[in-house]
Image (cartoon, rainbow, N blue to C red; front, top):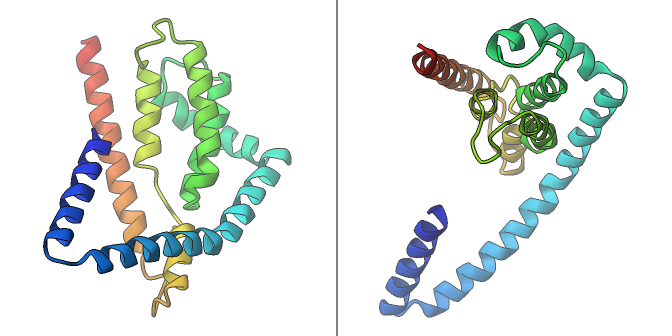
Length: 193
């Protein structure tokens, strides 16, 4: 559905530009947009490689396992349908850790592995389980303590104070996470009640 919306916006914008005689501007902006996208990718690549490497070192050195043990009591409350030693718990904890550091790209592989583990236990393969839905809510609203990627983008574009967003990021992601988890909990209770 979102694809159709974007196609609609692009077609309407292009037709409007052509109707107003701005074909040269349209071509220029298309080329500039492609160039800006490549430049942004090349500027962000070192940051993504660095943090993905750090997360890999943390995984290989079992720091993520230690973090998983620390948050396991909380995760068992959030995921009551999962056994305490379920392999998905470790991946969920790793995903939370990466998201807390503002590393969505590094969090993605852990999130995919967690969903894969949860899907193996799913009796109805075409329907998400409660644990899958809770994880999706937790991942989507993930609390970001240090929005690393956004700070890096703000630094690239010469922001006067690139770190001033830390407090607002913490508040916004904390509130969205709590709201999502409360809604998820109430929906689960309603389904079982």
